[in-house]
Length: 332
Image (cartoon, rainbow, N blue to C red; front, top):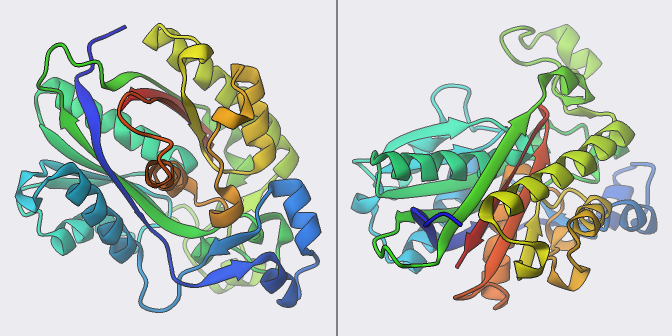
């Protein structure tokens, strides 16, 4: 097991005030109902942003919580990394807007686009910056406004996706003998599968146009069965690789915090890893699939529930559009 170079010093999360239940979605005229959604996804409700709630504002709220818990002031943040697929603006990055809201005037700030794996990718980049000596304290955020890119008449997607932000503070490990920190990480991608989960239009290749809006090509499209199959396979690989690199087994894991895509993928991932569901953290029922925000939201939720505390070993795993997937083991 490698000596940890960085550790998670603080966590926080923020979600929109508006709660949308399965019954609310059915009332919109979508061909679905509460039982249908719960059986297939495990989701009962999700938070959806209203006017005035932005990706930057939610991220800043989550970040302030994480910084307070870590005992870190704005001037101590060296780098801000935001994992997101739904930035407030295409230019500049939303991370620089968060920097301004937080008053982190000396920090570098940038976004990472890895869809649902966004927080994991950002955390791995943040740890690498600490390992290289480029930073001592990194604010890592996962945040999404998926409600803005969902077709609310498409039951394949609108029942799943939601809004929210989660934040973590990574700090350099000063104690050479300390056991807590990031023990291993792993990430991969496969662009050949892009069109199974993507937004066909709205970028430079196919800008917004009347035709795009008419065909609803600005919204997320997903081949659900194929995505499920690849998600389970990829997250299984990710858990194996992270455990191997950390030189631990499933028996050493106190808690698995997977991407909260749907409960079936979570159960399949846990089964492959050999981790019983009583050691798996699930909150997809309350928050839905918040993509890059799901793991840091779940982590902070677990901290607040007392399921992550000093000495807890946590395995994180995610899979997202791209396709991207990854994992990380950390001891708190």
